[in-house]
Length: 478
Image 1 (cartoon, rainbow, N blue to C red):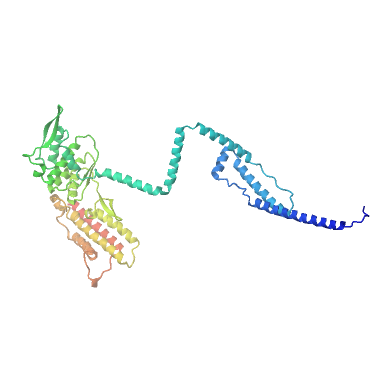
Image 2: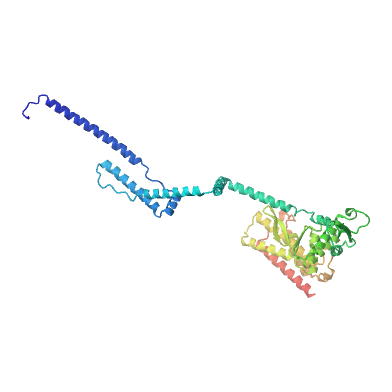
């Protein structure tokens, strides 16, 4: 056959060769396109599930080591993808890494168990339990909505709570409680012991001329009485008694009622001598001091004269006395400060206060003080002058004459007689020194004197304490 002539065979062979080449090129092109599509899918595939921490903890509880197995499997898939992309590019597919243990069977088993359990719980749950769960869910949702405005709501609740507390205090803060209590005595049941106590309290408060009487009244066959005042005629109380007399009656009623109880609780008086004259204030001071033997008595007052009377009464009754005052500090009222205000402090407390200030000043006192420091030292000398005046009252004059007190202590007059000239000169020297610096005097600008230093203020305080000691030693020797 090889020796037979081909005639048109050469042309057929050429066409067959061209067909084979065209078919191979088409197949290669399709293969390249399929490779590109497959590579893109592998590259864009999301292989990580980004396991949340809460879900990871729950899976760990259900199957120990399962979260780690999932992460290991994801890492293995990622490694295999990288290898496949590298092999697709190089064309060499040797050594494709194996995948780690597949966690899907375990996940499917857990899902099946949970599904069965949820189905069982749902079938077993009754309406009450479901309603309870729905209530808890609604509460959680409400808390979620409340969280952004929790601060404002809490502030509103606190304001409403404070408002409620202040409303409850309003009744207790009314100033007519004693008067209301006195009116209550006209209708409550009383006995002879209370009437006797009232007469005694009226006598102690200087209104002993007013007597009480028991008036019988019927109440369903029971013997009851009401308490009245034995006043002339049919006059009303406010027609024959002043406001001060009515207040004394109110105080007497309160103290008489207090005597009917066995407790020794503290009692509080807010300005108990308002509208009272001098003599009745003295009676009230003595009565409160006597009550202080049995219980704590707290008195609020702005009356300096009454305070002096109360101090004398407390001393005579031999009971303890603790004094505090209220003042403004940093723009706020009601700050409690131990002791009396400066104008009413004894000289020893005043000297102690000036010494504390002097010790602070002397630490950083400059050689050339500025205007503010000069004003401060002038202020201390003004306080020193008023302190010396109090020393003259209490020490030099022996307390014979005291401001805001109703009598002269004539028994101490011996302490004033024979005042030596040398002591008088020393007091005069200290006062004159204060007068040169005090704010109450306007020195001549032509004779301007440099202000004393903090150290000089300390020396003047030492001198004042020394002359006080000399004066007191001489008085004690007499």
